Amino acid sequence: MVRAVLARYGTAIAGLVVVAGFALFTPGFATPANLAIVVKETAFLGILALGFALALVTAELDLSVAEVASLAAVVTGALVHGGTDPALAVAAGMAVAAACGLGNGVAVTVLHVPSLIATLGMAAIAKGFGFMITQGVAFVGRWPEAFTALARGSLLGLPNLFWWLAAVGLAAWFLLSWTRTGAHLIATGEAEEAARLAGIRTRRMKRLALLLAALLAGITAVLLSSSLSSAAPNMAGDHFLYAIAAVLLGMTMFSPGRPNVPGTLFAAFTLKALGNGLILAGAEYYWQDILLGVIIVLSVALSAGALGRAAFVKKLGFRMA
Image (cartoon, rainbow, N blue to C red; front, side, top):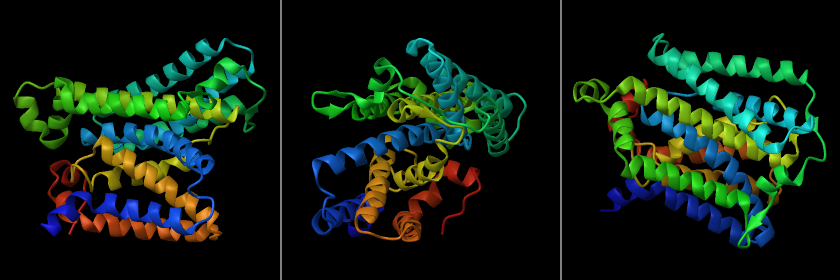
C-alpha cells in the first residue's frame, strides 16, 4: 500500500514537503507578493513544458522548444518595437512558431529523421535566425499596454499569467483525457505499429504533437516578451532543462510512466518554488543546481519501476532499473 502510494504520489509529496519547508523556515517565501512571483515563473515554465510533454506523448522528443520560443519572441518583439499593431505582431510570432513545428513534423514523418536529430537541427536554425534578426542586441522599450497587459495584467485578483497557464493546462488535459485525438496521440506513443494497424494515422498524430509543442513555445514567447518588454535571441534558453525536468518529474506522479498534464504542472511549480526558496534562503547559485539535481534523481527513483515499464520510454532509449 505504502509502496503504491509512493509510486503514484511520491514526487508530489516531496514537492509539498519542500514548499512547506520554505514556507515555515524561509522569511518572505509565503508572502503574497513572493508567491505571485513563483506563480508567474511557473506559468512560463509550465506552458513550455506542456509542449514538450505533448510531443513526448507520441514518443517524440522536441529539443527545439526553447529556441523556437526565443525566435518567436524575437519576431514578436521586433514588430512591436517597430510600431506594428500588437495583434499582428503576436500573430506573426505564433506563425513562426507554427512553421517550426510543421518543419519538425515533416522532418520526422516524411524525411524519417529521428526527432532527436530533427529538433536539434531546428533549434540551431531558430537560434541562427534569432541572432540574425537582432544582431545580438535585444529589443527593449516602452511597449504598448495592449501588449504588455497580456502578461502583466490581472483578472479577478489573480495575475493574467495564472489564467494563461490554467487555460493551456485545461486545454491540454481535455485533449488528452476526453477526445478521440488525445486517445490517438497516446496510442501512437505507446504502441505505434498496433495503432497504425488499428487505423490510426500515426504520422499525422506525430505531426500534430510537434506542431502543438511549437505553438505552446510560441505562447510562452509572447508572454515572456510581454512580461519583460524585451526580446532577445536566447531569452527562453534558461527554461529548457527545467521544462524537461518538469515533464520527467511529472511522469512519476498521478499517471506514473506517462507524460501527464497535472504532473507536469505540479512539477513545474515545485521546481520554481525550489529555486525561489533557495534564493531567499541565501544559498549560493551552485547549490541551487546541486540540490535541484539531487531532488530530481531522488524523485524519479521513487517511481523508477513505472517509468521502466512505459513502452514509449523504452522506445526512446531510456533504461530504468
